[in-house]
Length: 362
Length: 92
Image (cartoon, rainbow over the protein chains, first blue to last red):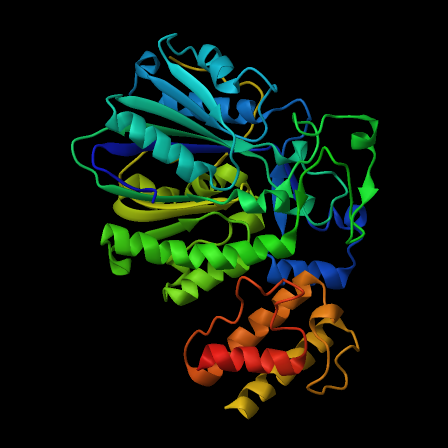
């Protein structure tokens, strides 16, 4: 069972950059065929309101992450050549090959001694990326830079009313460093039997791109998309989350011996208001302990939704307090994970909007 | 107990009917089909509405959604009768 404990790694900085274009649900009503009644219902039940996306299709996830990383280098006392590993968690790499992390090693001016590779994950990506970084620190490294995020506009078809209006574009940078004492506990799971419920069917090795891949087709719900775009079986994904998410909290509490009342904040992947409210009700948490507004303001930020929630709504607390927090992510794979970590006055500024001219001052 | 839950399910369906401005649930009986008449987002509406009403009635959160809620073969939300019985099982 993947239950792991670390006591010598800590998060020192979290920065998130979002796309430079704000789109409201009203702006998109015509594209998705929403009437006023539907808009009202989507706002109330799902939490649709606005999202931030990139204004230009040439802006990649790596560009958003680059800006976040540069912000850390400009504001945290760190020599960037001391970074020993660079992990890039994304489903929207610059190229099919090579790993974008290696390109970013050079672009960020990191040493050629840096370990750099991509991790292909979505909504559970922050937890898995953080786990990998903590494991690297536990193995002897001193500084790891974790980058997470997606330009979801790249994989969600513009007319897909099930998926596209949910999605926001974001890229985060998280600095993880060696410390003398900081306890953390991770619980991680995977279940590939549900892989077809959230998938880009074509453009991999299994189904190569062909002429048919590029033609928009109506699915069983009458929804339009191409087979090179992300498909989501919303019902099955709902069934999956309700099955695994409450259970993984029970598992974490039992394994770590950490009590619910010791936790200052529960920061969950922000994709589904029902599951967030479900966890809040089950654990009898007040709204301020479990933030739920990220999707309403920024959209579903995939592997950046947890750091995005911190920079969007908890940056003051993470910057000025000593905290014990739970992070939880769940989604594509299917894959899910939860961890409890200690946070102590880290660098966590308010969320940044992407600007094309990012300069490093060191 | 079953009658209390039946009242809650009826009330939630009437509210959904009004909110969606539909007439699917104008006349309710235990045989009324639910799942086949609702899109998944509207079924989620109904689940939340029923859970809120159950919390008011019983003073605690009772989760009625489960891993089969959106599975046409196994969902408890096929008809009003199956919904009431499914909730009764979870409440007790």
